Every structure is written in structure tokens, then in C-alpha cells.
Amino acid sequence: MKLKLWMKIMKAILALMVISLSAYSLVTGEYRMLPYTLLLVGFMLFVIGIVEIQEKRKVTGIFSFLSSGFVLFVSLNGLLG
Image 1 (tube, rainbow, N blue to C red):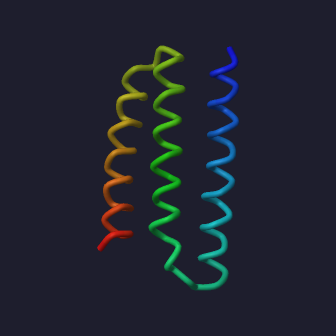
Image 2: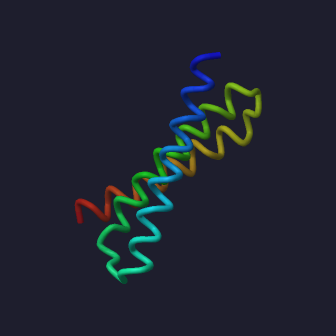
């Protein structure tokens, strides 16, 4: 029960961080924050995958994990390249 609550809190925190970074980039026109935003989106998708697997929605959880891997790869490629 505690893990489920913790994951929902983490999902909400990550979502707020993604929204705030995206809004900052949109308002200022500074797009150097995009890899960091994608990194946070990747972590958020990973947490969503864990929650979905715990709630017995395996197809959605696996899709979230695959999406998370792709987004993390793209964001790390943007940060390191």
C-alpha cells in the first residue's frame, strides 16, 4: 500500500517538474532545457510502468517501459552529444 502511494506521489512530482520546465521553455523561447525535460518524462514513464504492472495492466506497463527506454535514450543522446 505504501509503495503504491509513493509511486503516485513520484508521478505527480515528476509531472509537475515536466510541466514547469516545458512552460519555462515555451515562455522564454530557450530550448536548451529540452533534454532535461525528456529525461524527466522518461523517469515519469518508468514510474507509470511500475504502477501499471502493480495494477495488473501488463500490456500498458510494458508499453510504458519501452517508451521510457526510448525517451531516456533520446534524452541521454541529446545530453551527451
